[in-house]
Image (cartoon, rainbow, N blue to C red; front, top):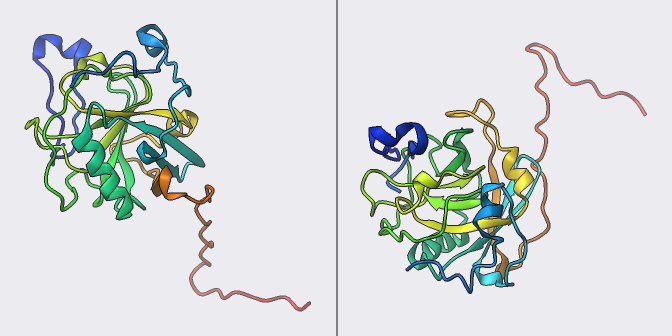
Length: 231
């Protein structure tokens, strides 16, 4: 089982690292359009970001809506390129959030095609691209093993701030719209009824409108048959 390594025992209560389930340049203040650390710590997520469809990641979740993420190739070019390649391969379509935890970790982890936490893509691992981007509400970061150069396909979305993760995991984007749908991701390790990524898109590929997952037909009790009433 792949996992995110724990921090030093002396800081465990304040800054414990999430158990990530996989082999998984500083930010430029003049480019960053977030509302600052104070807003971040108060769980604020801004939508005031530059329009850049080629670096906008769209996730349609089974919990009912679309999440829009601003990718940051300026600080994590290799991880962003990996995610874009996998998205265009439809790698993420149908995958689940297999590890979803509230405080202290405050994160929803997905991107494993096996749904177990041990899977990854067939692409090479991505080297560490640690930066000054903080692990605040809405931040998207690359999961890895104890090896800092082992990020691959798995990622986690922060429900709230966990600054103890900073400079240990590669932040490669942030939610700019649809955070309420992230909040609705089913909790658990794994969840009993896990939230799925129905479809993942890059915005420049002109994704269709969000479509909810089809409702599965109820199964009839054993021995019973469907009856069609006359018109």
